[in-house]
Length: 193
Ligand code: VGL
Ligand code: ZN
Image 1: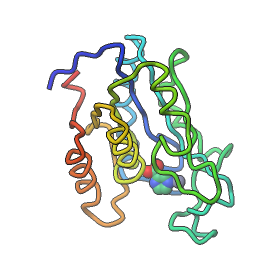
Image 2 (image 1 turned 90 degrees about the horizontal axis):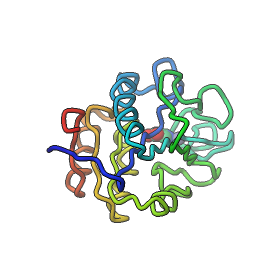
Image 3 (image 1 turned 60 degrees about the vertical axis):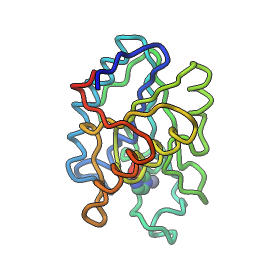
Image 4 (image 1 turned 90 degrees about the vertical axis):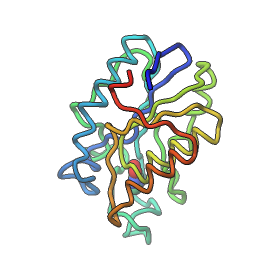
C-alpha cells in the first residue's frame, strides 16, 4: 500500500531502550535490528515536519512488574538508570519529538503508550488522525499501543520491519501481529513510504 504522508500523521517509536536490547536485563532477541529501520522512518517523518513520539518504560524500583516485587519480569528500565536510556544510535530529532514515559506508577504495569500518559492529548492537540507504530516488544508494548490507538479511533499502521518480540512462548510475535491486523491495523514496511 502506497502511503502518502500528510499533516495528520505521526510516528510512535516504542521502547527502544538499553534494557530491551542486546546485553540488557530484558533483552529482546534481535531487538537491535529495529534501530536502522526506525531511524529511516524517523528521518522521513521528521523531514516532513511530522511529530515523532518516543515511548519509554520508566519504572520505579518498587514497580509491581519486577520479580523481586512479585511480578513477572526481571528488573528493567528503572527510571534514571543507564538501562532506561534510549539506545545511543536511535535518532532523537530536536523538533516535533516527544518523550512519553509509561509504567511510572509502582502499582500498575502499563504496556500501552497511552496508559497513564499524555500521548492521546498530544495527538489530539496536533490534529493527528493516523499513527504509524514500531519498536519493541511486539507482543507487549507495541501490541498494546497499536490496539489502544485503534480503539481510540486512529487509523493505525504497524511497521513490521521495525518490530521485534520477546517470544516468551515461541510464536507469540506472530500471534500478536495477527491480533493487531484483526483489530484493524495495516501492516507496512519502508517500501510503502
Ligand atoms: C515491555 C515487558 C515489560 C515492553 C515492558 O516494552 O514491551 N515488556 N515491560
Ligand atoms: Zn516494563
